[in-house]
Length: 319
Image (cartoon, rainbow, N blue to C red; front, side, top):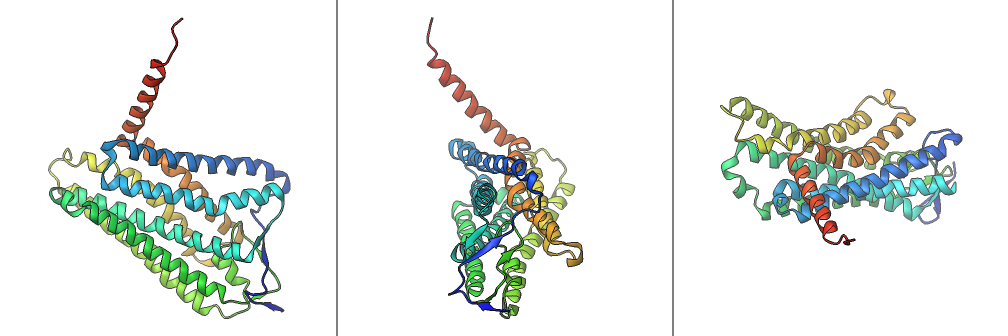
């Protein structure tokens, strides 16, 4: 087959979601609504944490960064997917595909590290409550977030630099709704063994090890709860554990099902559906999980709404 390297490559064709043409308008409306819900819901979380001084704690510091990451993660793929569905123009420039791949890897890995940081925060709060303020100081929290950004930036950069060195065959059709790294590698005529090795190493560093860290953290939390004579003292710390575990289950459950189950069980359509789960559905559900299952967030929302109601009543005209 004819080869084209990165200098002569002009664009890729993205096939999009595996739905019938008559279903396109319905799914366009559905995913537009889900994307707007993701953006507005996570912006609300950031606003509540910013305005309520009771939420100026390490847990909500990490949550605000997770909310920003979820907005960015969805924005990498969903707007382009919606535009392709609306205009029927399914191509993406070569430079655009490389950029989309970079930011997709970056925010996906950043999500993983932030969720792990939140698990560590819960571990310290429940297992070492007397030393919590010392261990989870402001400098430590900033260091954890900054380190997460730096590590994920480096991982994504390595992937995209290696991807940019590949030559591609005449078929430029990507059987996905975005420029997934694995889908692009399958289109390459070059030797991708180094790329696959990097995927394995980075996958262990950004997905497997953080997930194991979360399991260890909650193992210690469970042991502490069992040994505790009374759960009253750790009740407040536990209030966010249910929310966090729900997010962990959604995020890692989908990724494990997509990348770690036998390939024979993962058809291309199943891969696309699974990718939709952690790129569209999970970022949309996170605000609901933290709003409905978290007393602090519900309290902050009620205070914000009560202030808005009081302010509006002050300006009601008299008749």
